Length: 149
Image (cartoon, rainbow, N blue to C red):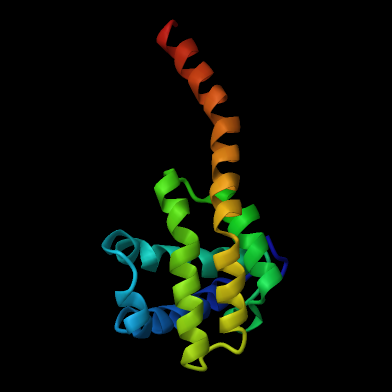
């Protein structure tokens, strides 16, 4: 976690991203997402905003492609407990969100972020599967030990 972390700054970040999200949810870009993606889009954008701040120390105006890569491939799969379907939605949802931010001139790197995240789809899914595979034997072993106790 960043040494510059503050709850006040996190609240400010959440307020900014929530405002962007509300506008996004009314846009044609949001309408292009499928119903499941739309249902999880708020959580996805919030997770991205929270973890880029908590672990990379970045506010939304500092988001850039390298940070998006680190967050989506390195941080989110370790910090968010969700099924593989959720991680398969990360790239399409964030790409649409960032494209919207760029189109509306709400974020100067919106288009670059959208392109980067879109290209990360397979890496995000693979990172989640790799982590799940490394955790599953431990969980399974714990279950067997508890079951036979």
